[in-house]
Image 1 (cartoon, each protein chain N blue to C red):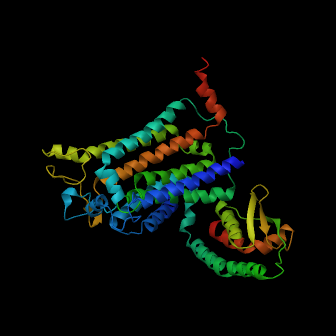
Image 2 (image 1 turned 135 degrees about the horizontal axis):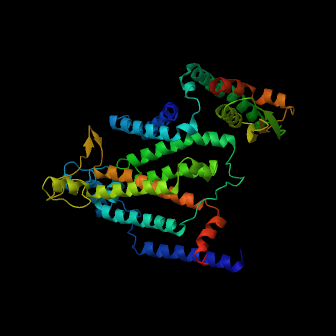
Image 3 (image 1 turned 180 degrees about the vertical axis):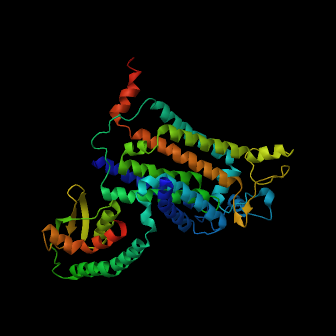
Length: 274
Length: 168
């Protein structure tokens, strides 16, 4: 590292600490960090997310983060999901026509026998843990995205340990994953309208993205079955989101595993006028 | 039928993992675990299991329990004491090196069990495997022998006897 780099880094650290101290002294962050009592907005969600005595304003799920993400600001999450899947669609479009070379290179035999044997067993366990994270998203930290990301570790590990040709042979292909991903997105879309559809069929009214009964729309999904909390639509959102996210990540992993020269050859083809 | 029978083992593993990770045995969770177990079992059946009959041979389970008890209470304790002595000894008496250890197990699971047993005991680590020559390359904290049969006798013979009865 050059001398002037050290000086710039050191000076910026000093300036950062001095500014932070100034802001803190002036009381811009409050005089207690973190504050001794939750803020008003936090109190609203802490008392509302699971509140059987006030069902019209409650999401009826004790996990406040999931309740906010898929109920209070559900529409926002829908568009977030859309952004994520547009990014995946964009990568699929960018790599259109790109596929693995027919003949695997001689190095495509994965890692040692021991690693392969252990991985065989852990792949199923990864998927089971992922399912638990997704299915309990309305009860414990986690949810659809986290569960889906965990599930995507299974194909990623298989790709490294067994090679990408193994995944292709086992039927984990780009097109199948696109199908699964679309099924998940379709599920999310249907769940958003589920209560509304039920309400229209029974002659009432309801909101898009409604979960529990609201004023003027007294209909909702059951929030408990046999004493176990279900979170109404939250559970369905988490399941479909996990499906869509795991398939989406798998598509990207599969695309990234294509050798660069192969991908460049296809992507460049049109540009050169071939 | 073949795939269905092979799905039982990995399905049970996924079922147990789901229940333990969730920490709940509510009927709804049991139902979810059953679905997850069936799905994961069917997906991974052909990858994980070749001969589903072995799951029904209970003497294998008995040997597995015996293996675990012997491994954790005899082999592990012996290896720990040995390495502890080397650590606290003022002269630090070590003579490290990598030796060839042949193995005679048939199935991948037996071979992996032996290799992991060697690695998990302090003082020995399997650094590589040559499946064609059927040899482990083992890093040994105190190389007492170089001849393949002698290293096998000192390092892995007990593990092999158990592992063969469980998996082969």
